[in-house]
Image (cartoon, rainbow, N blue to C red; front, side):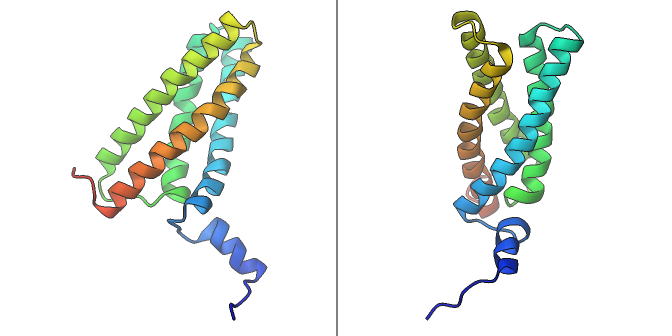
Length: 151
């Protein structure tokens, strides 16, 4: 007979204890990604609507801010960090750069080709880029923490 978990045990499992379980990491990454997306979208709005910077330049700057927030929250809470910090950050940044290119492309297509308001285009972009980057980052951190990748 299996022992039932208490609410406190579930809380620790989901929010406190380190975990290599993919669904728990995805659950946490959704929180981290959500907060990072708020930083990204909020910065995009401020840069574009209040500082009058072109939406694609604003999107670039905002994405960088969101990626920095995402990196630090991810290593603190979502993924197991390795002792290869430089390699880890470089690969995380490369994935972020790929996400930036994908973000810019999706934003340009939604705004310029489909004439969708830039913030709605950004939401579409976020929905796609979050799952793309989660998959690659999970693979990256698993390999680095397990020593499968050399420095």
